[in-house]
Amino acid sequence: MARLQGKNVLITGASSGIGRGIAIRFAAEGANVGINYIGGPEGAEETARQAAAARQGAAGREMIVAADVSNEEQVQAMFGAFVKEFGSIDVLINNAGIQKPAPSHEMTAADFDKVLGVNLRGPFLCSREALRLFLQQGRGGVILNNSSVHEIIPKPKYLSYSITKGGMENLTKTLALEYADRGIRVNAVGPGAIVTPINASWTGDAKARAEVESHIPMGRPGEASEIAAVFAFLASDEASYITGQTLFACGGLTLYPEFRTAWASGG
Ligand code: NAD
Image (cartoon, rainbow, N blue to C red; front, top):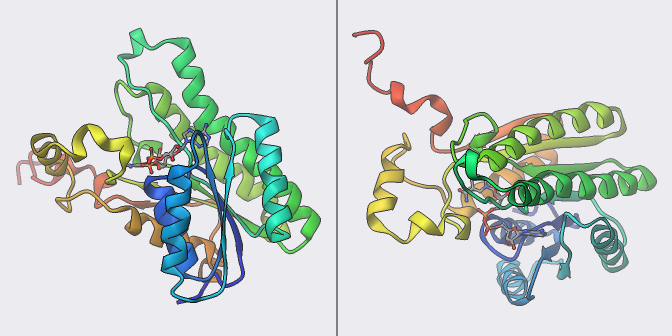
C-alpha cells in the first residue's frame, strides 16, 4: 500500500514506542519521514533504520531532528530543518508525551508544568508552525494528535496527564473548526493500553500485565503497529472528509468495561 507516497511527514517523539511505529508504517506507505527526538540520537537512528527497511525499495527517505517540543526556539529550528530537507510539509503528528504520576495532593508544580509543557504546549507550538507552512504552501495539510483513552476517562494519580489528554480533545476540535475551510484536517487517535516504554511498569511484569489485561474487553494490550495503522488512515486521503474527531483504538476500554456483566440491572 502506498497511500502516503511523496507526503512529507514530521513525527514528534519518534525515537521509541508509538512514534517509532508510526515512522515505520508511514515509510512503508511511501512517505518521507522526519523523526523528532530529545536527548541522544540513538533511538531516532534506530527508528530511521527500521523505517528505511520497511520501505522495501519504495521511494522516500528519513531524517532525524532533535528538539524539545515544549521549547519555542527549538520547535522553530526543527521545522526549519525539516523544510530545508524535504521542501515542504504535508502532515504533522503530535506524538511526544510524558507522564509523571503522583497522588494529586503530592504532585509538585514543577512536574505538573513539565507534563503540560510537553503534552499540550508542545502540540500547540508544533501545530502553529505547521499551520503557518500549510497556509503559505496553499494546498492544505493534516495535523494528527496522539491523545489517549484518558481524553475521556479520568486517571487518578495522573492528574496532569489526564488534563493534557482532555485538553487535546479541544485542541483537535478548535483547530479543526478554525482551519476546515482551508483544506486543513485535524484529528486525534486515542490509544488504550499499548506495549511501549511509557508502560514499562507493567509490560515486563507478568502479574501486573495480567491485571491490566483483565480490564481490557479484548483481553490484551495493543501494539504500536495497531495504533500506527490508525494514524496512516487518518493521514491519507481515505479520511478526506473527517476532521475534528478522536478515533479511539483501545480494545474496548472506552466501553465502560465494568458493565460487561449486568450487575446494575439485575438481568
Ligand atoms: P514513549 O515513552 O515510547 O514515547 C514518548 C516519546 O516522547 C519518547 O520518544 C520521548 O523521547 C518523547 N519525548 C518526551 N519528551 C519530549 C520532548 N520534550 N520533546 C520531544 N520528544 C519528547 O511512549 P509511547 O507510549 O510511545 O507514547 C507516545 C504517545 O502516545 C504519548 O503522547 C502518550 O501519551 C500516547 N499514549 C500512549 C499510550 C500507551 O499505552 N503506550 C496510550 C495512550 C496514549
